[in-house]
Length: 210
Image (cartoon, rainbow, N blue to C red; front, side, top):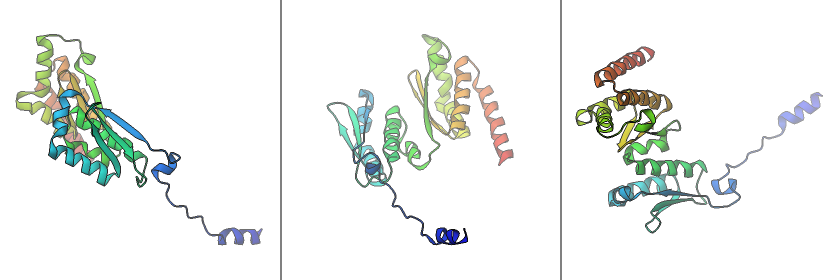
């Protein structure tokens, strides 16, 4: 038994090279296609914006990207030197976040942090509103000059996009949960002052924890 232990301890450990993305998929190229609605085509085609997206996806993440104007979609595919297969999905989430209305620099956090998500919901999912009631609910979410929306973003470390009756939230799981609760309260008719007081209480709790 002692001889066997000595032999096992002296045997070198295997040193495997990291598996590349194309090797994990049996050398098959992986694709993602993100449809682009017509109202987001012009912002995407701006030279500065597209060059920034191309730089982040192609150079930083080693994923091929191109715009297909005939089918109105952004196409992504892995390269032989793509380090991880997960980079393709991160790039798809990044492009999708920009198409939803987020800035490039805000959507870039999907590359840098793993626990970042995008959550979307309709105003009518919270309460069935029509006409002027719906317009007032959207106005309460934004506030005067966007103050209410910015206050929620700063308190919860999230980014919020209000696109007609659809709301998109970018942030961590906990931040999205708090921001969504605040937005739902505004949709249901709570005044902005009441939401501000909730945010102050949340801020004081976070300071005590820190």
